[in-house]
Image (cartoon, rainbow, N blue to C red; front, side, top):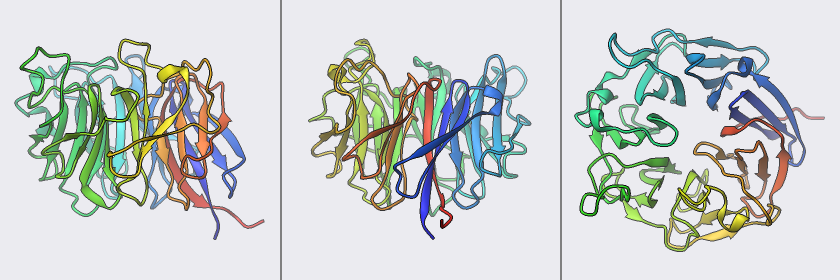
Length: 363
């Protein structure tokens, strides 16, 4: 059966779904959903098609939303999404990941929760906040958030998380104990001589290469990096990029050497695309070289940014690439970034973009 793509958007005012045709050339928008709660990250379990939305803020509180019918109906649960009495209240859920058995949620202030009953109830993965470095974690511009969760595709005990600003941590025992994995990454905001710390880095995006779980990429506040050993050691791969600063990075669905990145012009330079010209940058040799993909993207007076979870690929052949901007515009490419088209605009600030490939009924 032919396939088509559903784009899953988390925004400041609810979740939206954009459904493409089988050729990924025409698109239709549905939403907003989730009662216009802020939805930080909207994902799908590709095994079941169930949608999960990480939501909330200081006004609504934290919750994970769920839809088992592709957005027609939604429920949400906050049961168990709380730290122990006396600890800080949880403001929101920031990130989600699932391996089909367990659903993980990253929250603000930074911590990790798990659900073993499809999001109905939650339990804290307490080992992470028991790490000795936890009292030293500091909020970045978006708060003290756990924004990236990577699950090993074959070993459910292995988990990586990224915290702004705390760094990357890895567990080999299902979350009971954690190890900081930041060696080789700079923290330019610290004094000279202290800017390669064991922890405390401001990670913006953490990505696993297709088919190679020990190859990781990260966009950091202070550079672009690759690791070949699960994050134990990082190597700079920012040479050739127009800026070392940016937020989203996504992996090609099949080629571990192929990565997409959307740099911004710098942390205090406006945080928009370099030279006010939109471009997605790609490497096809794991960071040894970079090229800009601009065809179809605006090249004059562009002052949008793209936030950390707002870019995605799909699993079709050729792969589709998608990103959403902080001014509510969505761009799509059905040919691995060679040509881009605007598929939606005038939406709320887009916080996340993910994809779900679904069957396309024959006509």
